[in-house]
Structure formats: C-alpha cells, structure tokens
Image (tube, rainbow, N blue to C red; front, side, top):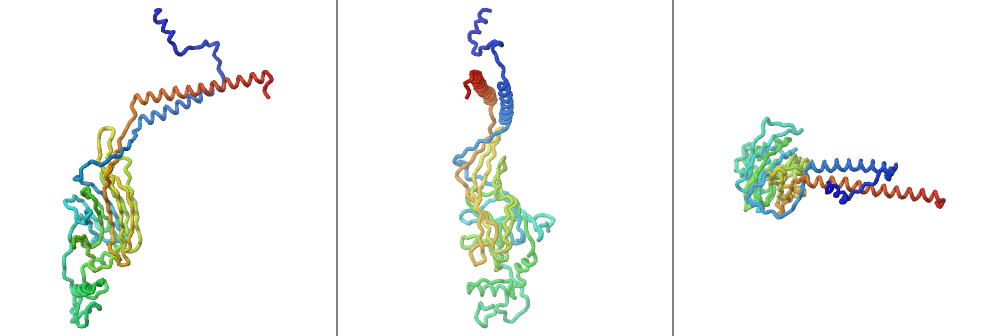
Length: 380
C-alpha cells in the first residue's frame, strides 16, 4: 500500500485546494466559448475522418500502346441530312485505321429536331462508297450545252459529259444548275432531304495513336495516298454542319471526371464551315478505396472554325483531331486512419483548452492590476 501511495510523488497535475480556487465571470465566459469551439472542431474533424479524400499523382505513362481507347460520342446536326453523313477514323498519316470496333447509329430528325424515323440506322465507319453510276438523261437532246467548258460543236449530252468538260478546264461545276444533271442521284437526294437534321451516336475503339475522328458529308475514298470525300460536284457551301455536342468521352467514367465538350453548341446558320476540335488526351488511372482500379482518359480541347466559302481546301463537317500525352495522372482515394483521427481529437481538446487558459490568465491578471491601480488612486 505504501508503494502505491508513493506514486503521488510523480503527479504532474498538482491540484490546489478548493479554498484557493477563484471562479470569475470572465473565466466562465472563456470556458463556454472554448467548449463550443471544441465541439465544432470535433464535428468537422469527424466529418473529414468519415469522408474520402483523393490524392493526385503525375508520372510517365508506361502502359502499352497496343491497348484500345474507347470513344463515346453523341452529336446532333441541325441541318445536315443523315443520308450524306459518313464516319471515318484516321491515323496521323491520314490513312484509315484498321480493326476498329464500332457500334454507331444515326437517327433522322426534322427541321424542329423531332425524330423522323422510328428506329436508328446502324452505320459502318471507313467505308469506301464511291461507285460510278450512270446519270439518267432529262430528255433526248441532239447536242447538249457544255456551258462554255468546251469548244463550239462539242456536245455534252449527259451529266458526266459536263463534269468531264469542266474537269479539263479545271473549273468547278455546280450540278444543281446543269440541265443534264437534274436527275443526278445526289441532286435528287439532296433536294428530298434538304430540311432534315441527323443525330449520330455510338462508340468506337481506336488504337492509342494520334489521329482524327470525323463526321462529314460525301463518299469517302483514298486518292493519291490521301483521304478525300466526293461531294459529287455539289458546292460545299450547300452543307451546313452546325451541330450540338451532346456528349464526347474517352474511356470509362470515374468520380469527378469532366467532359469539356458536353453541351457545346456550334451554330453559324450557313454552310461551308469546317468545325475542328484539337484534343489532348491524358491517360488517367483511378484507384478506389476498396482496391479496384479503372484505366481511363481525360482531355482538354481547343476549337477552330474554317470558312470554305472562298474556295479554301477542306470539307464541311465535324473533325476531332486527338493526340495522347506521354504523362499519366493517377487519382488515389484515401481515408484518414483511426490513430490519426484520435491524435487530431486530442490536439483539438488540448490546444483549445491551453489557449483558453492563456486568455483567461491574461484577463484575470489584467483585471487585478487595474483594480489595484484604482484602489491606490494611481490610475490617471
């Protein structure tokens, strides 16, 4: 028993007798405020302990370039009919990418944006559609005009004759104004669907290399190692590629992921505009608290519009040119440990009470000093 009593010599918290303790109004006020502050800080610390924080890391991307990148898109063209829209995915050398997995659909819309067709039509990408088809004659003529593109006495009885004559001169023919081309398939189709729009949506899986993904009118094909679209001598200004980007994403979704192009509206109310989006794709890894890992991508974008009304090179449509960053961003979910939480609580309680005691002592000694000066008549 005497050994236990000897432990009192190690008491670092010596207690004064109650007769020597003085309770003041200021001390009670400081204690009340300190208690409220401690309670608020404990609540905030508990909320932080129960929440999940996200740490961000940046390092060189070491993943293989053989993997496929999932692109999901949903774009509405206000005044470009579905019959003229093709979807192409090219690599950095302007050659069509091979072995692309795609699942793309298009839906016809009227001038007010309502569905015209009952079901969506599935379309393929990178399709060579250029097929020489004979053009029907409007009527039998003995010697059709070449509209100044050929010498006197030379006849242009068909639409193809007029096109060839203009090609020899290096002129651009507007087949809508050529009598022999009134029955041309493209002219008839253009006039039939002139006021329609189109919604194109779906997914493609592309190689992890720089390239471009575009939706544009015309029949695509390769010519002189270049990718071109045949508008069949229709003026590019006739095609209005004004559109709304409903959604574009690279890779899977993860918490906090941003979609910079969602809701983007590009409307010029005139045709012959090439809408270009330059996208920098950043590989991203998201590590969940439960150990799951998602590989995805984020992107930043710069936009540009090119007016083709002055015979400039280009094609009206939606062009998304992308390249991949060599750096990867990693997001890692993190939660505070129980030991760290308890240490924080102790620091809150001890720190606030220590500061409160310092404030209380300052107020107490200042008030005693002021009272002694007043009692001694020395206060001026």
